[in-house]
Image 1 (cartoon, rainbow, N blue to C red):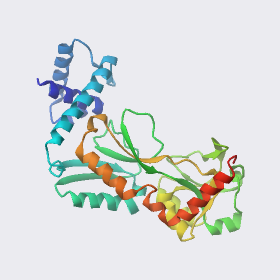
Image 2: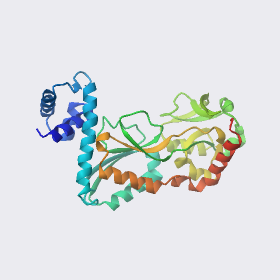
Image 3: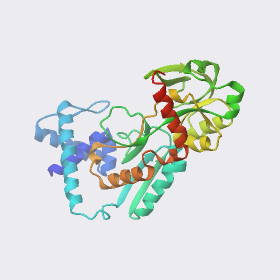
Image 4: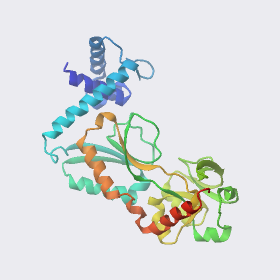
Length: 318
């Protein structure tokens, strides 16, 4: 079998995490995938994979995988160098993105991208669930937050700023907390995917500390969290892509700005084997241009965010 085909087969199996899923992606019977991998291992004289209840990869397999990814990427780059860029924007592109950020911003951007490349078939999964790039056959995912160490490629796009917010009505009735130590006296609106136990991670004196807040409402929907905060039910930690409109309209106020939590970054992630994909590269560059840095959703509250920066610089020990 052609060595490049062997490499692609092996990379697909590792990325898929199982023979069954790799066979589905390749459109090849599982028995054929298994036999070709065994032929590759016999030719190399080493075991690349650990067969068992859950498939693993051996140390030599890790080394071979890294080289395969690099070589296949170079082959793609060589082909792209002699192909028209527009012609390469064909076929399918599967994208996962969070629902909360897609309603107002990412959704229209992805639609504009699809309109620009009419020969591209886009499949979009817009939900707030965590997409496992190794187990599910997505080409690229947009992530909001701090990324875990991974073998995936992560391309940072912009900051994912988070703020503690509450409605003017809630603050008039319950008072404005000035320090996280006072959170125990307040009602909290909790994001179930991040803080199901009613504990907030806030920055104090340059360190992240945990603070308890009463659980008034818990949801896995960012938009429900926003609406509950606007309705005066309590304090909420919200990303600026959700909160900016309400802050600009004075429906929400920023609380304890000097202790705002870290929201990480907005990133595009994809597998090593897709590093050289012109479709992914073009999409990520398009989103980075459309979102901007600072991001487009923060433009209407620049004055408030600049004031936060000033307060922190004047009170570095908070």
